[in-house]
Image 1 (tube, rainbow, N blue to C red):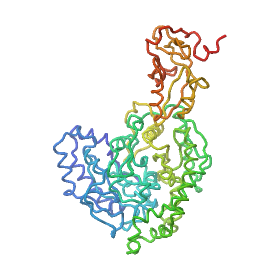
Image 2: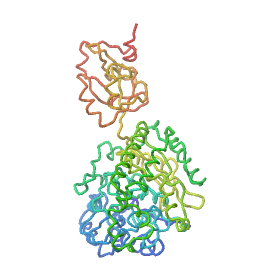
Image 3: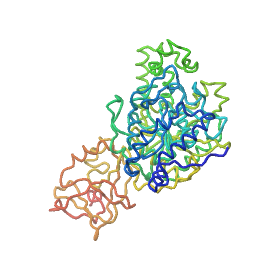
Image 4: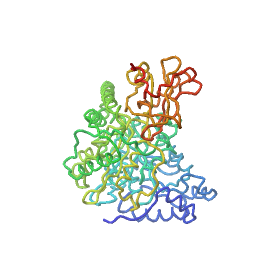
Length: 599
């Protein structure tokens, strides 16, 4: 089927508002009319907000200039397990519904930034499902193909962006509920690190695992939204502070040579087209300068099985159990079946599962230790509505094959569109990595979108300028030139902090090297007029360890920026000028190691 054309990207709307070509009130009225026309077929909204319900937010924007708010007049949709004050939150269960008395924290943040809610979106009941058909408010079909589901559980949220009635949407993701519908509807689906985006005011699925997610057309938009909302929240006991290395500044172009893991054994459940698209994704990362590294997915997939085969199903029951016991008919049969074994979960089994999960996490963390990110399919293959009707549990499980482990293991992840099957259905891949590497992953996703551009939702093309920054994450490169070189006296200071040697190379030919007066350390000083290339090593160090290393460096040495022979400027050891008193110029030796081994 042909797709509707529209462009609701953040930058597009900001420019239209700035030029006076559009007003929020006019835009929201048009989108409301469009959503009303779409809803009978797609069932994407449980509650579409009226003009009267939106008026207070629109009136507030009447008094401010568009450039004063980063999300001025931006329409967004809210999954209906997330509170919007004065509107019922149903979690797709009428008997569970209650009117919210205050906004969820993330909703309040977005409104304060100028964004305008469009409505509350449909979902798999109690966010238990990955397909979008488990709702008494109607099943959600795919935006691109009528024979397929939207994916879930954040079904309506994905559709709101894919069908052009919201610039972005809020979902939740416990087992894949943000990434799966993003994959099936040509969207970016950011599942940020646990605790980065508040879940206060969100109906829990698994309270210890839940994440609030964003659906967007581009990686840059997801990066901007994360930067605006990743704040500690005293209302959310599971909220975590976002480290500075994961700020908006970390969003950028990945450095060539980045290492990405690829499962050595892949399961596409017999879908050759999904496999071909995944191989295209791998080729794109290689074209960006990435180096593929085979990895064993066994412990990741073993952890995934614990989500529904282990005691975490009882955590879902903690939310809905009382309703099932008092009004079983109020909960869909498939949801009751999924949760049926929860009351029999005992404490001993729970602790055993926690121990097993921790063992898997230790194995998986060790695998990720030397990688910048991992590439996997988001779904092995799409499933049809007919297949879901015939085998609702198994076909739903198929969709979560590569997603269920992510929150159990505390990783960040983003779905990235990769292309389309022969029948026009979108397909996506997942980039994941260690917790708090979200902005780096989004930077890789942005580069991925650019290397072989695909049409965005609405038919527009990615035309924004390249990020000015180089992508960075929780490991930072460090240039060493002296006693910290591999095998030398102070190298242990790097290794005991988790340091890893990346490469041996040279500085730009603009430095001089001196043996300091104590004879034990060199000092490297920049000399634009009479410099030379000095042998150095580039190490990688956890960003959290850099402060303790800096404190251990005695004067006159310190850390500054060092220019390398390949043109990069990286943090590294430098020497203050006063420290050269009594020093010996050893530049002619080309490096500290050569000086030490001189005849």
